View (cartoon, rainbow, N blue to C red):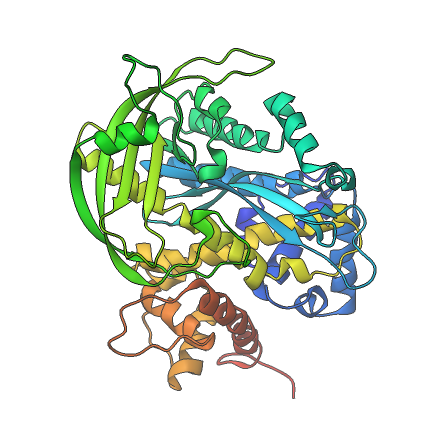
Length: 478
């Protein structure tokens, strides 16, 4: 029997076959209950496993149709919020196999690594609550793309229009955000992206009711009012300091030893003091072989570390946006909004580590993308439950969990009968996380992370099944 959340999330599904619509709900429910398990283990039987694989193999089970009802539910959740951040980013699904490779997969950074790229536009509240996916795209590169010399590819990219480049996905994301903002007129919508989206065509794109917030990676030229006027970064540095803050810098390790980019260098865990400046500017359009781009007025917020340690990488954010910067409060909001961008990285990590999408043994890329679409919804659901406990800690846990779920977890953790009154959602999330390895000390303030929650939810499903089968009030033949 499908879970209540899966039935609600997939209501309105249209795969051009009622049996496929029902099967989608059943597959989502089964895989969502055990996201880290293999598909045969999650389905619980040969017939269910075979039905799941037949579903992924059906030509009507496309990723777009599978995700369509989820996208509609996302828009409904967005309409209930005053402000929504639509964050877009790209990740790769590495499906390299030791022997036979997945048919239809393409090269990633090198021909030795095969896989698929996923570009997703995810909606979040300003406090990081995941509302769901707005839009996504999946593609595999052509093997021939690796055969050309780097200089030849660079020249081709320079001459090609933006519509023929992979970077066009960022404009597509902004256009989807604009369409969604048109539908959610009562909600302020802001499209957020990392430095890969620092593309002038994106800045020049008509934005309609949606704002955008991009981390810059280029020191762009400005429309000059005088001969000595500086470029973007220098003009931002010249602006007065609005305020200073102390932030926690998370350490990182370089993924490869030969990496030279500043943002990929290793960094230590430490406290850093940053100065924040803001200025309005007009960007000078670059030349393009196929079109004439207009000058664009933008606001720039510079977050820069004061006296960084000589042996560590300094902190510097250059945020280009259409949001207003007239007050300190507005600038503080911009910085806080960009911090939410990190949530999509956690979403990708949940998709890969929690749902183990790269480990799925599927032979063709079309079936894989259908499977990926189902796990995209499951990854969102995991993060949603995790963060709902932080956003609405006093909410009755039965708003999310069935009685069999919370009661069985309570008994398993506390070793005593469940209370008559359901516990708070925040307390329930901590109990579930304990099943996944979270140490719930009395004085511990940090909430559970996604990993302990998804592991705990998997065990919760088994406990709930046992409760409904053998628990109080059941009549089971022995």
